[in-house]
Image (cartoon, rainbow, N blue to C red):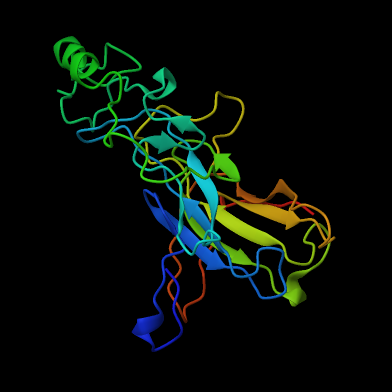
Length: 247
């Protein structure tokens, strides 16, 4: 939504069809995305009554269409670029699925459920059924996707004082909190899981050219450990804490 400050009569929708737009920022006025909203969204999880395995997190742009209507991104029947009914998103028996009876000995990997309850999940939740009879508006695809369970937590545009090295004017940075364990790990060792990191987006600098984006890693917590910082208190760094910044 957008509005002029302290004027509720100016509230206007700019985008819908989101599941959980968690990291959001309007672009600066001098930016290629000026007047548009950059949205980092956490995708569906393998849990509840509509469990979905491996659904990506998505990065979308919200803006009004030429006729003043908001753009529509497809939730709840579109995960990123694909329909939610695609077999790639079928549940595999997560411990948070509503029909799962957790297996005490975990003898049925990658499922965490007993064989009988897994059979019920595969019977009633596969394929993932559409919620809507048809899309209520044309679906606008995201500009990028991130790994399942990587979890968008924040996004912002870099100020001029931060423009240095790989950070170009108009760049945006976003943070990924990391895996919450609803699906299997999103990477295979020795590759690190996607998450516990900050990524950088640079935009092309020529306003007469079509919009182009480039993505790269910026900083990563190599340990995967999480810390809490209290305002106005010194941050205590454990000896094992590591943070790598790439320039």
